[in-house]
Image (cartoon, rainbow, N blue to C red; front, side, top):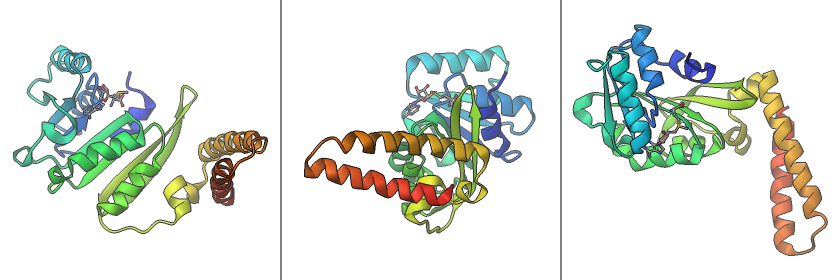
Length: 225
Ligand code: SAM
């Protein structure tokens, strides 16, 4: 029942860790992990009433109230030091939103050792935040499901340096160059080339600058394919 996307996120959760799943919606991820016997304690956070109620219902219907605590609140504010959270998962949102949730809640991360993040778009925002806040990429995965391509980043505490290119495409993903990686970036390249072509028809310095930015990104990504 669980999507391949969330199963892959789940595969990085270590046994017996205390998990906070932020933006949990139906709480499918923590429910799966408890059923699989990977963990026994999780917090499911939600900031929107509907999904919060869905999460509570799901946890009760699976009889997991003793294992999963569904809490209402914005981002990481749903847990504090007494909860001893070691792993945080945030999945199914844009990279900039995930980065902003981490940035707003960064004082909650002192005891957390693993962040498992699944941005739907713009993973670069997460890599930038990670460098700034001294987290390093331990693993990166790219997968396709229902015609959508997803990236998953696993972060541990530590210093990392990334080039402009690695920030954009991922240091591990760009080394692996999997068929899905190539598909994703070929799609992006085609889209950027289409835009450059459109911009070529318009005069003006602002347009020229936008075009140069895109051409720079095109050159960066092409090198990795
Ligand atoms: N994590 C699930 C998954 O990957 O299938 C649900 C993804 S759903 C598209 C995103 C969820 O994040 C929504 O239920 C939304 O209410 C919640 N969300 C968005 N911003 C949030 C925030 N700042 N704090 C907590 N939850 C948030």
